[in-house]
Image 1 (spheres, rainbow over the protein chains, first blue to last red):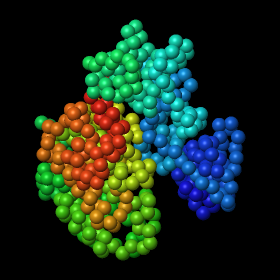
Image 2: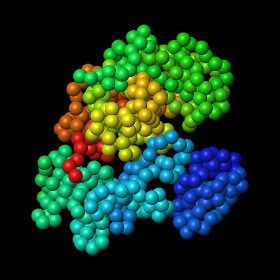
Image 3: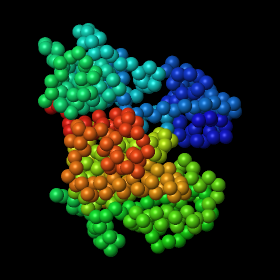
Image 4: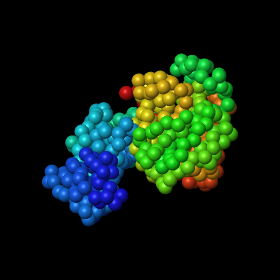
Length: 196
Length: 267
């Protein structure tokens, strides 16, 4: 969306207090603080405020992602849309929720942070299963294996936030509901998968 | 089997008992901007809509058959005098399909089958609607986590601004009125008769499939048949223009959503 002084009121209505990107600044994520006919004032994760000159005009790109799991540090994070009544088109607390998977397999609500958005938007990362099992011996708490499948340190395997399978370390075996066997077997190839 | 109208305690007195007909019935909301001269019709209510601009109005049709709805669509677009850009990105067409006479379990299966085939509905209306904040795809949300529950629980935990909205089924904490309908909010504002007719045909096919197959269980069907095979049975108006591989690819994610409705392992 090309934004300039002519459509600053649309920018204000749809994007003020949300997170966006500008084509001209690459992968940088910006929080739009205020909008006037002359400029958009926004901050990045360094908290430094900059002005985007609307008399010149810039290409604003907004992200309203679909539900997905991704790796963020030592934990898997799940992002989902909240289809509540609101006007905002950019990502913000009102339309996006984050949850994190703890080592014991609980999904916990997680704060809305610019680092998280950047982690998802720019390079969502995923763990190979073998590496995850190795790193669980250290301080890794949970892993995102695909955009839908995650696993906690204690062997609980989830599709989104639903527990669908378990990994037992002693016999290196996966147990899952039969209906999910095709998806689980694909991710845990090389492991024995038994169904209930 | 408990029907929607009984479970949600809906009144049957409106529209001379017409709503108790099991055949396809729907009510539409046509949003149009830049209206220059107004229309008057006994089956169409004209409502000012503050989400629209430039003399924008909503034209609401009374519950009508498939054929009558198309006639009302034609009436609106033949008689309204419109200025420039009457179908801006703010406008849309919402269709309420009457499901009050279906068993609640059948409606739950209709919801799950819609969820499976949702990508076909969005493919028809285009990517702009998929990213519209007032018709969010179910697959973008956490709503699939309630698919394993019954329809009353689903209804109580639904969000209005999903493209497929079950809140009008009954009066609840999140809804304004109990209409006994499911609202399809996907379609953009248009005067194109062919587009609207194809859309309405797909909604009728979805309803008719469940009216005629009340014991159908999509969670069993997806174990042995592909999304493409199911789509061709349920909504041929939207499925027949695509190849099998394309449909299966489109629905790869939504298959998982529907599988989750059988529930996971005990914690």
